[in-house]
Amino acid sequence: MSSLEERDVGVAAAPGSSSAGLGVGAVGAAVEAVAGVAAMQEEVGIRREGPEPDPDEPPKKRVKIPEGESGKLEERLYSVLCCTVCLDLPKASVYQCTNGHLMCAGCFIHLLADSRLKEEQATCPNCRCEISKNLCCRNLAVEKAVSELPTECTFCLKQFPRSSLERHQKEECQDRVTQCKYKRIGCPWQGPFHELPAHESECSHPTKTGTELMGILGEMDQNHRRDMQLYNSIFSLLCYEKIGFTEVQFRPYRTDDFITRLYYETPRFTVLNQTWVLKARVNDSERNPNLSCKRTLSFQLILKSKVNSALECSFLLLKGPYDDVRIKPVIHHHSFSNDANETEYVPLPISDSVECNKLLAAKNINLRLFIFQVQK
Image 1 (tube, rainbow, N blue to C red):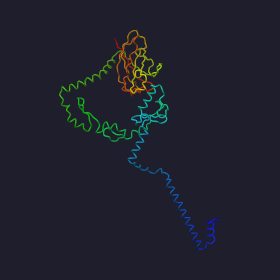
Image 2 (tube, rainbow, N blue to C red):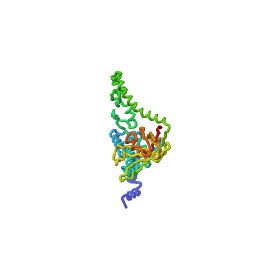
Image 3 (tube, one colour):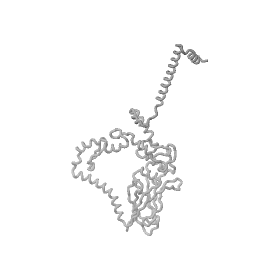
Image 4 (tube, rainbow, N blue to C red):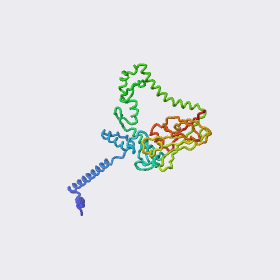
């Protein structure tokens, strides 16, 4: 028999004695102490686990993050939200592959253009899954997050959210670079915006003589005439009796040479009762245009019909009704005949290599062609 059983027997054998009463009191105190400890442990356990959240309880205030911690958080966000190609934060649209890797719009278009030039399937540089305009989608959450990240103004060096930085630098910053209002009459000054009033009050150009001003205005008129010449030529062409236009779609093809090259060609189309074809090539059929940062497109117009006499025409290409490519119109002239049914390759007047990459990345290139027949 254990000592605990002996104690219980002793207590039961002499209930009337004083020692028995003492034993009962000690046992009761021990039981109460154990119960108290258990209750305390249970309470501590509940506190550690935490009470269940009350849905009706108002939200707690946000804990203010110290400046050092917020800086570290921004650095981590920069590394998470940056483009996987250029490793910079996106400035506009953000695309993601099927596995969620991010690419800025410029790098995404560049990858598609490179794959078109190399006749390969474009892949994500991180996971090598296939990417295309159909397979990838924009990540609007990342675009919003990037727009709220702070960035530094290049003029006053203050921090602003990216979404408001452009407006600040163009309209609000007192240190932004500006020009004198008398620039049109030859003042070359440029400096911080807050110094502009002081400069304009002392600028000497408003007091120039008439002879000096006439020389400056003569240069301005010359530039203006050069710009207006194109528009006047187009207005003159619109007065012709025979005018035709159509939407054309350049489709990519490969040459059959030992070294294949990318070129574009449209299906045959009819304008002014004649059958025509347009062809285009990249960097004037350069051997490896994918290795070049500067990219251009050039095109030629081909007459497929037989003609009895020379057909003198003017033509120009403009952007199609559903494309956003920037094309500056240029008028070309050619006299078509059975012996001279092709024009020389002429540059497609796009603004820069970025616009060229947009066209190369597209499945097809959609433009609008105008042909004006010159009457003899």
